[in-house]
Amino acid sequence: MSTEALLRDMRRQLRDGGLHGCMLVRDLHTGEELGIEPDTPLPSSSLVKVPLALATFERIRRGELDGATPLDVPPGRITTPGPIGLSRFRHPARVAVDDLLYLSMCLSDSQAAEALFGLTPPARVADLLHEFGLRDITVRHTVDELTDTPVERFDAADVHLAHALAIEGGTSGRGHRVPHLDTTRANTGSARAWVELLQALWTPSKVHPQVAEQVRDLMRHNVLRQRLAPDFSSDATTWSSKTGTLLNLRHEIGVVEHADGQAFAIAVLTESLVPASFQPGAEALMAQVARTLRDHLRQL
Image (cartoon, rainbow, N blue to C red; front, side):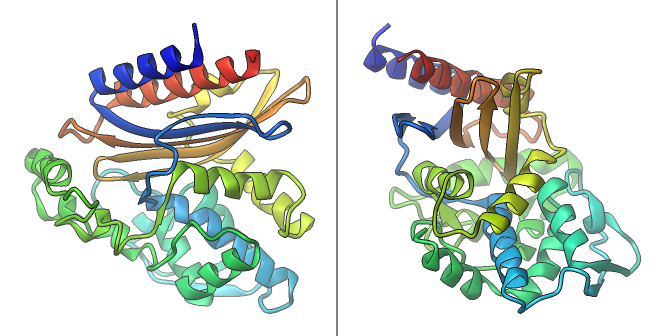
């Protein structure tokens, strides 16, 4: 099948599965890539925790922060399904900066990320990204907004209404009635911007090698593996990733490293057109399309 025919078929599968997808797969050694709307910016959701970790590790390297410093973290006390870690704690906790990084990246703990943003505000994270030559990821706010969405305003039986609002409340210019989904107000990035970040972490770049390795190590230990991991994990591969979920958004970025030395950066950003919280079929479809693109690129 030609590349053009393959991309048409992948777009059709996404559409039939109720997803709008923006994706990019890049061979990290050759630079060859395949994508579907790779330059469309979407709200980042928890993907922003990767730039946050990068900035925090860099500040530790510079001596501006100490990873062993304990911080007093207020309890998240969230009761709605989804968040884990400190976000569900009922009482205050004292946690070291290094351990907050683990919780933020590997469990996607937003309360831990909020504490880290208290040390390195969004503007500082954005400045450090620019220092590394990564200018297409916007970091405008902390993650507290991710735990205050329309979902929390509805009873459990009516959560579908929050998702319907997320699906129907957008404008042609990617504004949105829900501020979390408004690309002029939210943290944002395109599939290409996230792949550029992954490339900077996996290949020589302006990012210090020690810092890049620290971020890669956390991504290797990500425990949220229900999305792309089933299609990219095996005894002959290593899958390192970070997920992002918010209302009808389901994202994942990561790198699959093969035993033969090949490595591919993958960014999959999706908007569901189905007003439902739990959509395992959508997550399986994301992985299937991403793997098909990777397989085609690997064969070229």
